[in-house]
Structure formats: C-alpha cells, structure tokens
Length: 416
Image (cartoon, rainbow, N blue to C red; front, side):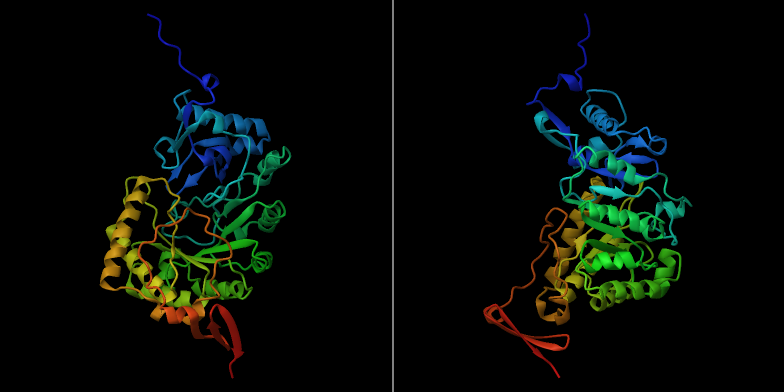
C-alpha cells in the first residue's frame, strides 16, 4: 500500500488552522550568529539568516521571507527543519492560514519585537551574564542597518514597535549614535536602550530629553560593594552620576531594574536600592531573577526576595514595579510568576498597603509617558483607595511649591 504523501505549505487552504506567532511573522532579533525571529529570555527561535550571509551580502528581502516560511512549515510539521524552542513556546497560537503574513518587519508592539544584540562587547563582567562569564565579549558581527534597509526599500518596514537595543554595552559602539538616528528618523516606535550607565552620551541625553528613547539600566543594588561583586567593576558612583544627568533631562522614560542573584538578595541591598529609587524617581522600576539557563531553576530564595522587594517598592513609591519576564515563553518563568503572585498576596495579608507611606515627590514626576508595552499585568493586590475627602481636596508639597487640588483643579503656590 502506497504511503500517503506528506502535506506541504503549498497545500494549505485559507481556513486551515495553523500554529504561528507574531514574532515569526514580523519581528527580528539580531544575535552574534545572525538574524532570528525572537529571543525571549532563555528561549530563542533558530537562526533565519546567518551572520556570514549578511556579511557576504547574499541576504535579500525575499530570502528572509522564505526562511520565515520554512520555519513556519517545520513548526507545523509540513517540512523538516530546526524549530529551536518554538514548538513549546507560550507565544505559539492557532490561527487560520489566511491570517498569516510574513511580508513585513514590524507593525505591532511586542516585547522586544526588534532585538539588537549583534555584539557582546562590554566594559563590565556581570555574574549573571553568560557572555561575560564565558569570555565571549566580541564586537559587532555585521551591519544591522543593511537588513532593515531591505524591508524599508520594499515599503515593508513598519513602525509601532518596541526596540530592545542591548548587548553588550551599546554606548561603546562606534556607530551607537548612527543606529539611534536611523531608528528615530524611520519612526521605529519605542526605542529602549539597555545601557549599564558607565558611559555618558550627549546624543542619548538629547533623545531622552525629547522622550524619543527609553533608558534601561540594571543597578541590582544600592551598595558599592555589592555592585562590584555582581557587576565586576567598582562603578556605581559613576553610574549614579550619569543617571542623575539623564534624569535632569526631564525625560519621562527612565527605567531602572533589579536583577536578583545569589549575591544581592540581602535586606541591606534591598533598602539601599529603594532609597536610590526614591532619590532618582525613575518612571518605571523593573525586577527579574537571574535567568535559569539549562537545567537550572529559579531559587525559592530569589522569589522570596523579589516578593519583599516588590511589596516595599509599592509601599513607598505607590507604583507597581514591572516584571521583566512577562514576555518570556519558558515554562520556568510561568511557574516563577505564579509563585511570586502567591507570595505577594501572603505579604499583603500580613502588611496591607495604603498610600500613607508614599513619598509625595514621587506622585506626579513619575507618570508614564506612554502606555505599557507589555500585556496588562494582573493586579496582584490593590492599594487602599483614597477617601472621598481625599478625592475632592488635597494639599501636597512638590519641590518648591505647595499644590492644592479641589474637585480636580490644581492650584500651585510657590513656597518660601
């Protein structure tokens, strides 16, 4: 009996249900080895075009679209080929084939829809950075702008994205300002620059002042000794000096982060970090456990520490910090988020939060400039709402002014 012929992508009908994700259809992730469709924490799609192909200038728009289709076919068992972590990723969804389109780059706000990390060179050696620990700190491997140009020339490069420009340390790149100019001139959308803050850039400052970019810096502590232990160099004073300069630009896009490791989950580190946040007034604070590569799991001690950190950040800033892992498709992070939610609710049951401990100067200057670029985060527990009297009338000190609010109207008086 003759074996049934295998179905291929060419056999699909418009209403056939297939598995695909938005990253494969429109995103890009530049890594050392070439262009991928995504990198979400500890999981990554296989390479679409290699660094060597880009360097040798054999990559075309049609080739990238074709490679996307090949990966799509492999995911749906319509062809043989590597699928990396794709088949088990939480972003993979079932949709009608007629809704699948591989022609564009960009067009939807996704966490790291554009991931720029085609190099790993850095002036720090963080204990939680696999590149630093492996000594794999190398310069850019190809020109990413050439790839973007392939789509722009076809009219297939769309805005409305979130760009993760990380590394390595981007401020060390000789074409750092050139890349920033290209991204802003072509209206890529929201551009997040992941810098360690050791190098001050006037161009970056100017873009921050216009709220055209976001600054993301991981401080991971508020203590110089811990910073040196975790980050490999004694640079916290320099980092804080540069962050103050960037803060003074008036930007609404200052984001700071705490990566929790075995070395920085003490009460001293936590309270020093909270005091630093109260001083710098970032627009968003993010938190994240050290990535559990391979067979590693996220330690319970780290989850306990993160719960305590988040609880106290809410208590003293009145704002919900953001979980950096929300986009990550690894089941390890799903289990971590579930455990964290449970621990936060337990903490709030013991120590209910209202807004009586929130520093007044934190309230207005830290309003977000744009809406969240990640899916809505579930409210882990509510902050006690203001009373009726507080809603219609309040008096607060803000810098050198006294602010009176009556029925929604705000009146400012200069204080002596």
